[in-house]
Length: 273
Length: 158
Image (cartoon, rainbow over all chains, first blue to last red; front, side):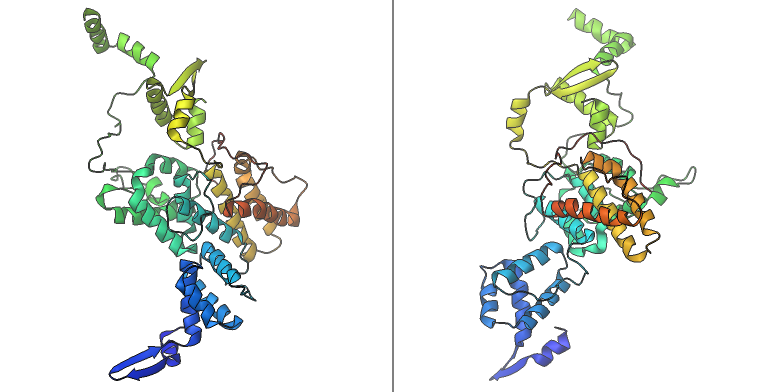
């Protein structure tokens, strides 16, 4: 339903002088109002309009199915069911096109949505308000979920583009080592997308294991997710480089200073002062 | 905690953790004591740090372990739709092996060894429904400690 031709075919045309108005059919209006009511809640005028339309259970079911084609995420399903429940309408059949609303895939998506919503992504419901969220594993998991929920993937990508300074690349790299290859490959695409949108400030390239692990001898080192990290402008913190002298614990540093020639000079100077 | 334990728990290298601990110790945030050739760090000014950080969330899960369990269960669920009854117990046993360390980290009791063969997938499904179902709605099943504990060093599962 709601394809353009059918929508136009069902519309009622009224002419007011030189003005031609196409009024959508009742069942199409139910779809639009239900989608808007789920989006804006039971206090919105859309919800009031929907009640005034007094749709039949069949029209509501069709409308619910149509809204699910626009947003298949589990949080939306929860909100849809809540809105239908509020208005004392019950869907006689399962709204989700999947075989069950409680599959592990659905539960995983709901978990990821809850965590991302807690991090500030626009979500339908806040379910994980008293949870501490660890973003790096969540990013890897969301990249792996990928096309299971395109909206979640897009929202997570946007969040990473905006907040990449809060993500530790060193930690992502370490966590990725423990993950299976399909997670690494999925993160390669995700990271490349984030890098493309974050501009030159970030080098989350493609850390595909095939690229990283099977580099020909003497071949130039590929640009992966974790190479060529450029500090953001204005960021005065400097990461340690491999050329810097190693950081030693205090006891070993004192020993190092006593034994090295430069250290002895420094100690002599300090004693003289 | 030792540097090695902190590194495993946080997902950073020991070198990173040692550097940061050294800096924090010099700043007076951490106190250190040496035992053998290891340094053990603890919070030196816990009340001040607590006042600075503010109220901590009630649930502090080990996200890496939790999402590993979720991922393997999703994979097994997909396999259960495509594979036959003969191979499904093999996949279920493999999944159980892959997530056993994560279940330990999450303080979730492993399945009984008596569960074998065709009973394994339903048992895993029930375990997933209880825990993943609760996580998905923001609940932490009672009986599981929510603090992120020391993780074991593990390699990639495949």
